Image (cartoon, rainbow, N blue to C red; front, side):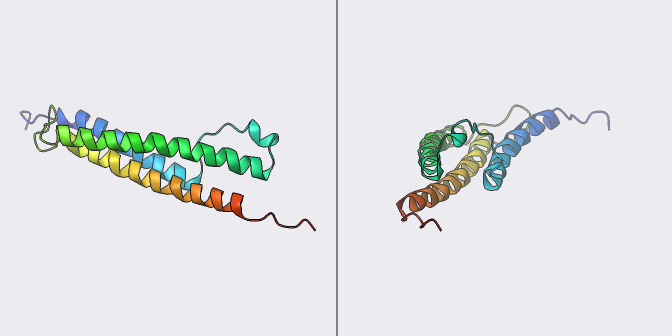
Length: 128
């Protein structure tokens, strides 16, 4: 019983922390609980706020698309690479998992971007 090596548990915990971080980011994005700087909100009206939000969504989407492409490339490059202590777990799995989380974030942000653009394009409601 004392000959059983448990060295793999630390590595597995570290890799699961990576998954938790990225899939947690998806949840935070869905709940709109991400960190944001609201200095401009007090100085912008609803239209200005929508424009700033749309520009932010475009920039974040661009970053995530590049990040997703890099995840794909890294998954391909490390698909057969074993981890240091777990010969049954490949490093490519980590990049695929992160890539799935990134794809979910892209979908959420694009949906928000569409909502922002539609709000900008719709005629302003008449004030009572």
